[in-house]
Image 1 (cartoon, helix red, strand yellow):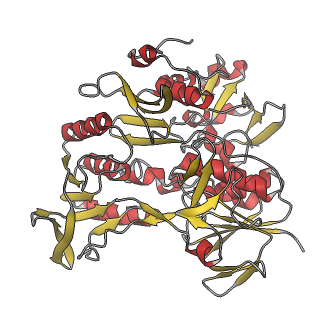
Image 2 (image 1 turned 180 degrees about the vertical axis):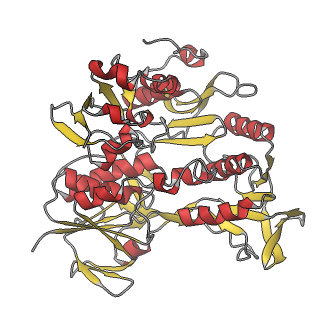
Image 3 (image 1 turned 30 degrees about the horizontal axis):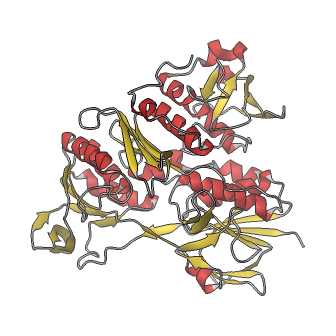
Length: 404
Length: 106
């Protein structure tokens, strides 16, 4: 019988696994199963260029339809309900059963719910899929005031995109500063300043208790009773990994589906990649579930190799990016556990600077705002583990003109 | 049909159809050219679509822009005719273009 690889989840990771299987000469069927009708598409632009209307829906597709046809990758709509590991079969929501030789779990993540009263009112949105964004764009067409719940990257990017569309925007953050989980206070203060300059009101320490309205949301009610008028609301308070399928199948899950450096789960026939996976990272000596496209791609490449009996380890340094207004933020590495910060440039005044994170004198991460050279420098330095010279880090634009 | 050829560091040639108005990165990704990832989707944020243009073609396709330059400046595999393929929109007159894919992307 022809070997069959099933890719569960037509996500960034799923699309990359399918492509990688062919690159590694998988000699058999490849079935890419997804529960969204569209071709696998890019999610990062959803809160950025796509929401702001600067990008057409066709441009979202990671690869054109031709690619899947030419590579003989079968796309199948539907959700996988269960995996019968003993029989090597999966069952789809429509009752169909598919046998498999290998599986890649690329089930992604779903928005964390606020679970506040009134959340089901019309005009309260989460933002994860292109369909979510299309609904938000319809709501935004009439203008008015958008209230964003959550001052993380998605919330702030959404705020910037809606400002571009001419809406009044308020961001409500429950913690004492925006981006509190992911950046240094200097970077949080910088984004707060820029959003204020762009006309977005950011309220911190603002815990949302409920949404009020008659059928359609009209007000956001804060703990303490204050009511804020809203024409629509977008909630962006993080995501939860989709691990039910793995858990039910008896595969080891700890926050995400646990994978090693070769994207192997506890079942030798099953790999996992992307937002649903929790990777034992040698670099950090702990398990980390990364929510980033580059990591999804890295893990997917390793998964495809593993499924073909080859070895490719997940080794690349994690990195991230975020676009807001004219700010291009590129983040190299993870800053967890930093004990020192070196700032190059003036984040209180300018729109270009870098915040370096060090631990015991070693560079571990950098937030680079409109400083691509610092980003590349940081990626290289962190990856190599080279010593850094603090004075060199501090020097503004130290690397400008260093080549060519 | 017009075409573009990507040559990998191993010397393997991939001749693929040249789609007008698509970025060269997207053309490579759509055709499964190895070594071009386009992780960031074409925002010049990742540097994983670095290619080197055959010098005979630089007049036709142009040199790197400022945003590309910023990303390429620190790249050890950088070459005078280096570009980021995501910042290059294909045109009919590119028929026959040859570009090299470096061994390592950023």
